[in-house]
Length: 238
Image (cartoon, rainbow, N blue to C red; front, side, top):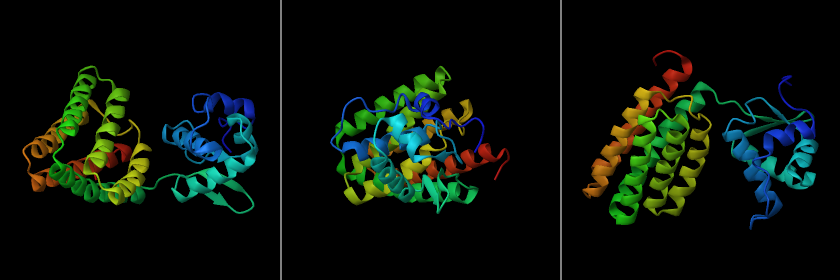
């Protein structure tokens, strides 16, 4: 285990302070624990290769070891955690091939989502897309990577919502989790401006009622995101 990783409940409590639920949710202790650990992983607070000790997590999150154990089982199914028999659970690390596959799957799914959203044609969704676009434009002007990133996550989640297809939404939820692991590492001022242009093409096509063009714009956006993100993370063109 890395020396920078807390091995005590006190150290882990400091890391997870912002994720510890203050009130019980409808998902109960297990749902709250899954959410807390998942968000900490996606935010990079629990970094790749970190060992997740049940006893430390239970004390840090104020729950028994049973919901922690169940939460780690669920997170293993999501690909965020890997278990080694007789050793323990560890935050996974995405390989280049994993990242490439995620972006390719995202392109196919979001292309379909954009087509569905266009056919739904709900003005309130189009207005939300435009508000998010305005927020991202302001973040770009301020070079605010964090707010741009959060608004971008919301934009892509809204594509899933606007598609109004339960099965597609479940598939996209898995992709969203994987994409969030990249965080702001793949962003640059130039890429932020490109994303705005690519989002604008999707929005324009949806408002125009052209599902084929909207789908093509979403697929093109995912392809550009893949090339830009992987090149930036690798430190060289792909």
